[in-house]
Amino acid sequence: MSTPLFDVVVIDAPELRDALGGDVLSLSGPAVAGARFDETAHRWTIDTGDGTVDSGLVISAADGNAPYLGVAEHGRPNWFSLAAAEPLRTAQVRFIAECLRLMAATGSTRIEVRHSAQREAGAPARTGRWFWHRMRRRIGTAFDFSSHVAVEDEVYDGPADLGAGDTVHAVRVRLSGHLDPIDGRYHWRGLILDALPDDALPRSGAVTVTIDGRTAPGRIAERTPWGSHAVAGVGTPPFALDDVVVSIPAH
Picture (cartoon, one colour):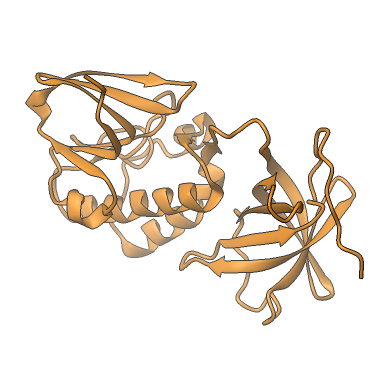
């Protein structure tokens, strides 16, 4: 019998099944006998009394004492914990939801809190609205995102210069792309992980991204409520490619 596949497994948190949407399996704590993470596929295998289930992400209701904000622990990727009581639980749910949104925006299949972020956030998480608003804005720098990507995909995660009109902003980006076999052009997209002021970008959304002297035009595709932006472009990307031929249409 094949192992059932789920996007998310929630343990002792049945209310999250409807909140998260997608393919979600709800389990009770006593039904979970063990769990192991596959670093190649970036997925958890959950052992239950009825067999095993395979999941990309696990969210478990616990005591909320995970080292980072009560939700994450370095060394345990793709696993989040929730406090049992309000109001901390609701704040953590919103924080985790933003982590999932950033994973989707960057095409990531693995998320893990950085050891440095965990060490700096050793104090118990607070419940204030502005505290969690600030923490959500820092997700891009507090967590490492990575992808289980195809061989032809390229991924860049690091510093870049974002050109917006006459202004250049030093930012951290996570970009990936691939050569489209249909139009023969290279398509790249990703996330600007640093928050930018509201007036930093032109209305048209047209920007340039420069990495190690390589500049590519792009366009802001989306702005999140917490200040991060998705960016995309077609043609030669701003990051280095390995043995890829990019077709640039003549003007």
